Structures are given as C-alpha cells and as structure tokens.
Image (tube, rainbow, N blue to C red; front, side, top):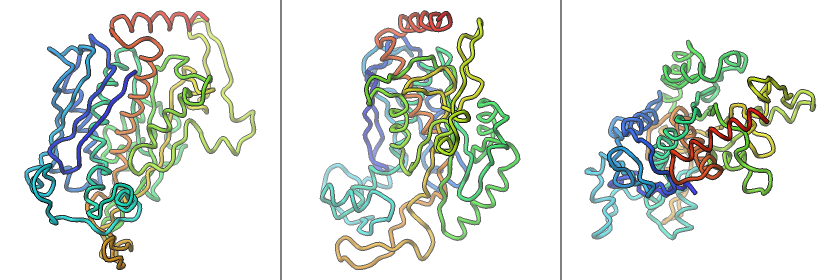
Length: 390
C-alpha cells in the first residue's frame, strides 16, 4: 500500500518524508517536485517566511539515475532559516527560554497540545503543528502526480472566495475545469476567473491594515479518473470518505463537500442526481456532475470535484489580539504572534491537490498492483477497454 510518513519542525534543520509502496520504473524529474513546492509558496497575502524559504527537494533514496527502484523514497527539504534557530531548536544541549511561548493562540493546537504532551513551552507544539509541515505533502503529491499524469489523470485547483469576497457560481460554471485552473495559475490569488485580482487584493490589504486574517473557499478536482476506484463494501473503503479525511487533515480546513454537497440537501430527488446516458464511443456517461464524480463510495468516471472551507489563520497581528491565558501564571494575556500571513487559501488549494493526488494514486495502486509501473499501466489500459465495452 502506498503510504508516507513525514517529520520535521517549522524552524528545525529540515523537513523529511519517506514514501513507501511507490512502484518501480517511474521516471522522476526533480524539477517537477520543485515546481510544485514553488506553487505552494505563492499567493497574495503570504508573510515574510515565504521570502526566506525557497523550498527545494533533495531525493536521498529510492531513485537511481532518475528511475524509481520500488524501495522507499526519501525526500528532504532544508529550512534555510535554520541558522537563525540553531540555539532555539537544537536537538542537543541545554534548554533555552529564548522565543519561548507560554500564551496559547485561540484556534491553534498550542494549548491542547501542551496539555496532551506535557509541555509548558508551547513552541514544542506549534513547531510541528505548523502548516510548514505541508511542504512535504506537496513533495509527495508531486510524486503522485507524475504517476497519475502518465495514465491521463490531471489534478488542479482554484479559489472561489477569500473572506467576504466571493466569486458567484454563475461567473465560472460555464468555464471548464481546465480553464478555471489556467486562470488560477495566472492569478496571484489563484482565482477561477480573470479580472478579479485587484478587487480581492484591495480587500486583503484592508484586512492587513486592520490586523485581521482571512479564510476562504477553494475547489480541487481530478479529471480522467477511471470508473470503480474505491468500494461500497465497507465504511473505510469508501473513496469519498478517504478524500474527505485527506483534505480535512490540512491545517485550518473546517469543511469539505464533494460535488454540490450541502446544496443537494435542499433539492428534490429529480434535481439532485446525475442521469445516465450511453454512447458507443464514450460508453456510459453523465451530462451533469452533481455527485462530484463519486457514487456509492466509488468513482463513476466523471471528474472528481471537492470544495473545502479554510478558517482564518489563528494568529492576528492587530494590537488588541485575541484574549488568552498564560499557561504558567494563569493570568489573562493577549495571544502570541508567531506568523504574519493574512491569508493562505491559495497555498492550501495547492496542498489539497497533493492530498487528492496521494489518495488517487494509492487507490490506483491498490486496484491494479503496486510493484512495477510498466506492468501496472498495462493492467490499467486493459481495464479501461473493459469499462468502455461493458
């Protein structure tokens, strides 16, 4: 089974990830991984940390002469800011109270993590809970995208709202998923439509002056996905559940829906489901995609479309920040300030692409085998012929 385990702190020496179950004979271009890492760091409203860290990946194992070996792949991404944190985050030596955090931020892992793991210096919590961890997820996602693109599966994302600023459905529903993605790639905010950037940037700037942070909504999709990934036979084999868990695991994500999701609850049955049609060339298909590409916990051949809601970043930069309590003195205190992003919704969309890519790559390998990519592809092509002729 394809799996990964990552490690590292936000201001530690490096972030690392081990990917196990990745098949042999896949050609890996390190530039594709670095391109995905760069996409994660973009986005209007990001803080100064993105100016410090220019993430680049180093492959330490599992690849020889650009070809995967079938053994675990190790990827390392060094933190360039480490030299300024060597004393504070050193794995050895005597503890220091420099940059100590004892005022937990509401909405963050600080307080609960401190209680759970038994620390009063909450830096021990926030360093790992930080969204900096998603850097390795994007590296894994890049490896998975290489697999998926080789069999015609494409993944993308776009932003539809930041705070109160929203792009209405009617403004982009006539655009194909690819057109929305292309617009996002040329937008500082990864917006699904053209001509909205300045309006959104002015709003973000206003919130920055007021010391606020902003959340938003994005959509992530996959096209070219074969019929029958996932299963209805057990609760934990349903693919919609796996996708929802993967997206919800991203820091600050508080809601996930697939297809038209919650809006389906307000419709009658005749308006909620996707009618089935057949064409000799296309096979079975739908003219609508209200289900978002998933029925009964399985892919139905239509594009997978997932919408996610991200809450505002917990750290506020205004003078009167959120009220908290010092974990040592138990006195009221204004919550700590640790980062300066105003919004990270565009970056979260890129991370969501990686998580969707991982889940789909894992399902592909589970259904068709996970040893030799050359043989796996043959089985995939044979299965697609079967589906078309069903």
